[in-house]
Image (cartoon, rainbow, N blue to C red; front, side):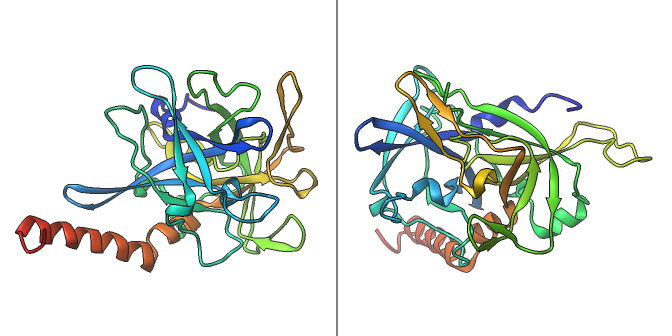
Length: 287
């Protein structure tokens, strides 16, 4: 790629663990934080991941509990218990969309992370405005099962290009059709839920030169691999984890689907009600 990625981008991700019946707490996927400013002094933070990362393959239901690991500013990473049964999980009205959104606010005085602002999320309008097409450069950041870090999170960065943008939904797994981007890149076990970024350089269009650093946008959320039409998974041997990897094509749920969740009527109403409640408390009209 034309230049190195911004250093703080790796700080947007966290690792998601689950409790295995025999192996204890094991890594299962990647998540990242999005922050929405609703008022001058009020921000809403959300943990975003692939929906299937939170679902038990045996029961087809959400896990009762998952564990989210963030790096601390000072000291080792911290594993926080997240009781999914007690939280509202926001999803897209189209059930096949593989995105889950959970309210989440890690303490910025304790944890070393960065949140993604909404203006970096590619909407359908921004997609057309930037003229994003096959061949554009992408990268994603996620959990690499052979080495995710014993004491701290060490996310791996993978690079590639857009392989296919289709007006039609893409057949995924069995007979399910989904809105997906296809990327020419390899994805490994634990990458599910990773943020995928467009990295648009100034010389990407022949005959046109734009000065300045590459433009960075959230392209979407890593869904999986087309290896046997399976989600990104991994297996473990007694010695070390071994990731299943794809044959070179990865599937990404477009970021505009995330935008539709975050700014849909239900979640927007929740934020507006919170702002109104805070205003009432400030005015002394409610305790």
